[in-house]
Image (cartoon, rainbow, N blue to C red; front, side):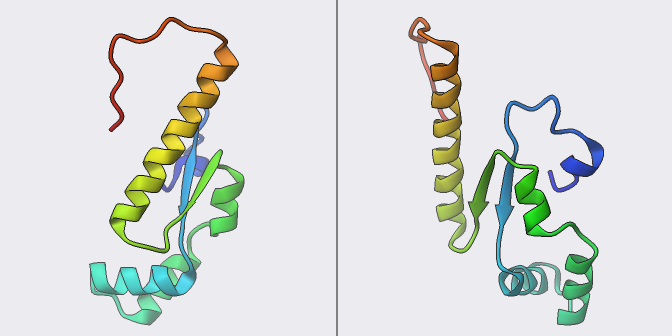
Length: 102
């Protein structure tokens, strides 16, 4: 959720992830996905928080420089790490009957 830090919605969350990309990648994606001109895309990005601001508010930062499939795998790996850290912090727990990652 892009506005999480502005709306303080991160407080009830177990973890906050930030997905970043370089400015040229963001501009190209906005132009391709939304049909915006380069000046329109730059103006929209200029009105938003920076990647650094989002990263400071995040527990995990995912760099989105590849394919959608690579980002999905990075997100799943981050989820696995967060779940493992949570289990380790909670101490020994009974084994779940079934567990499924998205």
